[in-house]
Structures are given as C-alpha cells and as structure tokens.
Image (cartoon, rainbow, N blue to C red):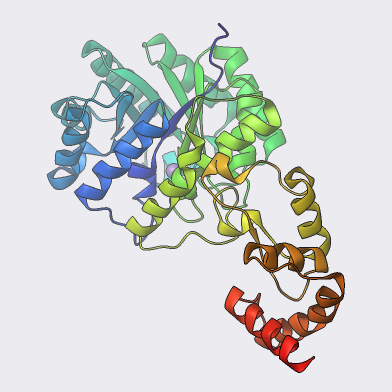
Length: 376
Ligand code: MN
C-alpha cells in the first residue's frame, strides 16, 4: 500500500461562510458537513467556537454527528479561544496568527517576539489537552522567510502537527509558492497545509504548486467560496491533482455537482455555467467541429467524463452547429434526417440562433423542421 500523499481539509463552513454576504443556517451547516463527510474529505473546518452562540452550538452538533472525518475548529492564538473549542468536543484545532510584518505592525500592533510567544503558549495549552494542532500563519505569503521558518520551527518544537501556509490576500504565483513551501519543509520538516486565495485566479495552481513542493494538506472550499475572490475549490483541486499530477484521492467526485448546487443555494448564489469542473457548460458542445468530435468519441474534446463529477453531456444546437449534431439531435426524437434535409435545415437553424442570440430549445428546432417540411 502506498502512503497517501495529500489530505483535504475543507473550510466551506469557516472561510466559506466568512464570505461577505454569506450566512448558512445551522441546518444547512449540518447538511454541508454530512455531504463533505460523504464525499470523503479528511477534515472539516467547522467554524469559530469563540464566536459563541449559534456558531459554537452547531460545531458541537457537527462533532456529535460522529462523522468519519476529523472536525477542526478555528481559533486565534489565544488560550480563551481554545477553551471555547474544547467545549465543543473537537479533537483538532487551528491556531491562527499573523506572521507578516505588515500585519504584525499595523493590525496586531505588536512585535515578532510577541507572535512567537503567543504561538508557544497556545500550542502548549492545546497539546496539554491532546488536540491535533495546525498553526496557521496568516499572511504568510508576505512574511519574511527567515521569520516564517522560525514560526514553523517553533510550532513544531512545541508539538504542533502542521503549519498552514496562508496566502491570505491571494498574491502568490505557483513558481514562488513552490520555492517557499520547499524551503519551509526542508528547513523544519513540519507537515504543511496550503491555504490559497483566488484574487489573481491562481488559488488552485498555488495549492498544486505547494503539493509539488511536498505540502501534505490542502484547505479547500466548495466552488471556491470564501473571502473576496474565494479559496481553492475542492472540485478543481481534487480533479487537477488526479489528472495533472496522478494523485488520485479517495474522494467521491461524482457528488461534486450536487454538492456545488447545495452550497450555491445555501449561499444565495448560482453555479456559474462556465465554472471549472462543475459548471453546466463544461460538457456542453455547440460548435460543429467539437460536437462532431464528441459524438464520435467524447475524449476528443473532454478532459474527463461528465459522470465523474455528476454532470451530463449536452449537445447544443445553435449558430455554430454542424449537420452531424443536427442528425444526432433529431435521432434523439426518432427522426432520421437525410443528408439533404440536414443541409437544408442548417442555415435556418443558424439564422434563428443569431436572431435569438442563443442556442435553440428542442421545441424551437422541431418547429423549424416542421415549417421546413411544410414549405418544401
Ligand atoms: Mn482565508
């Protein structure tokens, strides 16, 4: 048996809900936790117990579900926060602290020494309660590399189980990410987790770069929901690890579309049709050459099969369609178009699609066909 290379910690319920304008009901949080456990994530970042009230209550409820994965609670590097986490019964926590000088000086208004001291105290306290501890370096991507290594080393020496590298404002690129993560691992030997943001559209690429450099964990959210432009989407990370790096995680990818739809609804959003991996258009083909290819062999124009992520293939008939797609579409309705009929129909279909500025519904197609037959 080969050792697992990568583990998924999903933070839809924490960073995802932190998105401006997003609030999940407790019922929705529990449903999302159940679905995440069902698809097979290794860890669910369930929320922030120190917020108290409903937030703390629902984390406790998620712990009580006894799901087949670890439940992690988020904390500042403050002992009082960790006490709130202990109340919920979680066995794993994140201890988060800013590590860049810009955050240390302008947000925390303190010093690097104070940061190191806070890490020592909070990790010592958490480990004395047998918790699994992830030390999160907030704004790690803008931190001084020497200090970052000191932070990770201190965390490890005090018993922390992993270090979360947070590209908090999403300004990393994959090549630099690879170098930094490799340096942290080489220097400290600690398990690293990637927490990447998508402000430049590079969240998935940076997460993969981290994995290539040896990071063992990736922090994801469903559809990339999260602060500002969001986090690394679980569906992208899992499929990209499999198809580009040959790392096939035991994740039930066929539930990705269903999960995306549920989280979209709970966050009052839609799944964009062009969303990578789970958007409805990922398997929609209209152009003549593409539709013809896909009808002959789907592998010609599809990176993976729709069933793998819970989608369906669609051949759209519109401005860019060719006769092969028309013949295939009419065959679905039991009509065998002759070559001549298809050639006659195609310009009428194109004209209508241009007028309507969209692909045609099947009913519209049938109407054009009927009119053509009546007219001929
Ligand atoms: Mn974040």
